[in-house]
Image 1: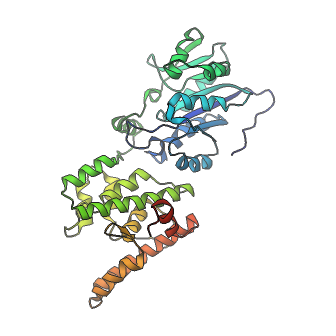
Image 2: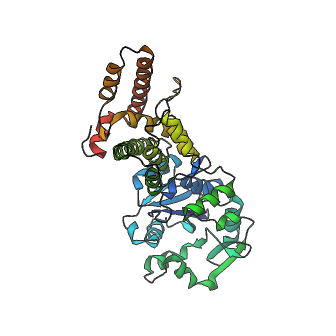
Image 3: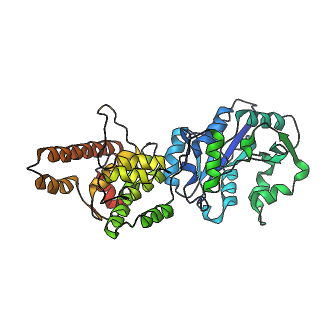
Length: 387
């Protein structure tokens, strides 16, 4: 647990609560770890407050908390685990509010799917908070309220005791007489991210390239439309399971990876299996998903920089594919011994096979150095003893 933020004697103290505990049902992808420029959505939300000099930032986690905690530790903010997150968002609001320090005068409340807030907006809300006696400060853009409201700590007990339907919105509506709207030049306060289309619009608003990754359901549909044989389909599923397990462990040790991208690329890596140069053919079939296509294009042969020890989604899928024979997880030696023996009289082919093995071994060594355990231990824990 991180140390509580310090404040000077007499300093007016504000906190920020970011709620990131939900299931992301409508998005069908895990929202906090989606890419938004060079950051994840969660990092973008946290950085909005850091830039406005908010010292006490608390992120409430629940679903897939083990993947978010390492990110929050790196950012140096407080992690609040809500064991009751399945009961809905208001349970996470309660968990965050309950954790506030007595010295806190007020708190921002931001759902993680509203991560785009300008520093000027937050500073204007703070200025209003300290120059009015009203307890609920809403940012508005062209008259429409957005996120995050800044709420006086005198509402903490009201939040803790609220037991009526409607959650936080219904509670605050009871106190309109204590609320004020602050107009800001920041349309980002109105942007949320409930659906894939919302995400695309947010990327467009921020000026980022569309980095959409197909959902697992969409991946299965793509494989079905390509008449993927059952044997290949089962292989892809096993590669996806192994890739996801490796990615999750690497994230716990500080790697900045997109698990949704890893899984999608692994599921689709053999989309064109059976075609000559199937990696390149498969990549062309995925033109609408450029980040996935890039990984698929290099899943048979990968170019490694000897001086670069980093691990990306591309290396993970490459290695997982080499560790899966049909739908069984095996070892690199077992995977490559057969082809090397089969083509022993063809020097050119044998050299290509050996280079693939060398690259896979290098990647495996890099991963094991990061996670500090042999790769077969991951397989035992995460994949029911395979390996």
